Image (cartoon, rainbow, N blue to C red; front, side, top):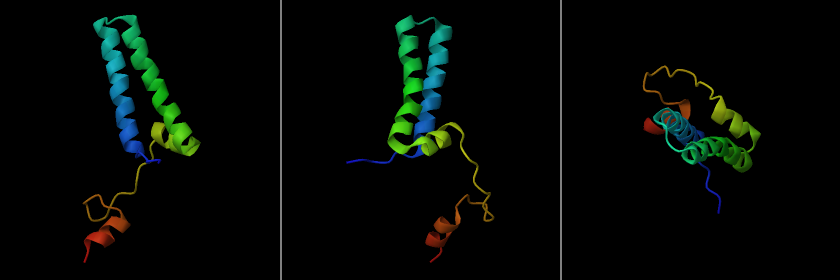
Length: 85
């Protein structure tokens, strides 16, 4: 069974691992720790590309900005239609 992971969640994990890699480097942690964190940073986009294709990996690395909602609530049209009953 395959479960689609939202790109925003994968992007958040990528950023967290990148920050941890930088902190580990500055803090002087052992090289294998820094290498493991850096390899995880490289593996996240690779896993997204394998699981969702190149377009999803591109979206992970270069997110597109959505159009600003006119209501100010940040909902897209479909979500707005669901909330209005």
